[in-house]
Image 1 (tube, rainbow over the protein chains, first blue to last red):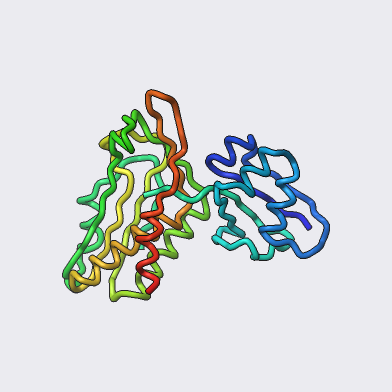
Image 2 (cartoon, one colour):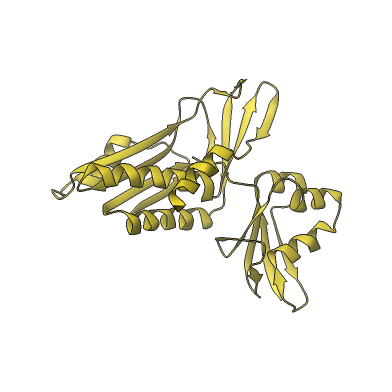
Length: 85
Length: 150
């Protein structure tokens, strides 16, 4: 399945990635599984996605929790807790 | 409903007028204006840069207005949030609500600000004499939002 991922704020800056397209095996993929998969890239990815930053995930512009399922064609985003207002 | 994310400044008087002009059923407009401060936790702020998630931001602000509309008997609402680089004294956010009576507008305005602070995808980066750093989310903002869950 093909998905698009966006990274924002501290994640974007530290990972030096703002967006990427991934083609993954067609198995049940949750936000948590995707984070764990990406975290294997390096210690920095591990720290950013699984560390104390408390990264939040969104699927197709909706905030979701770690157990939300990702489907083919979805737009996923990872970002730190929000600080607007 | 008016929801806008923009780099340019906004005119509070004009926006409030939009909520009540030709609306004799409106008895109250409550508004909140956020301004960039020059001090945060002892650091002097030279400027603030705001990043957001285009598409999701507008959607989440609209969802916040709709939640407020389902909870209180309000007539209309406006949310304007600025992005890009701002300086102390700059206006950063406007939340304005119209209703027949003040109580509903006061509560809805506070509710929308609390949700905006914890759900809308904006991130602030501060520039001080020591350099730039991303702001940490505050526990107090999360607590403020949770009180509406009761």
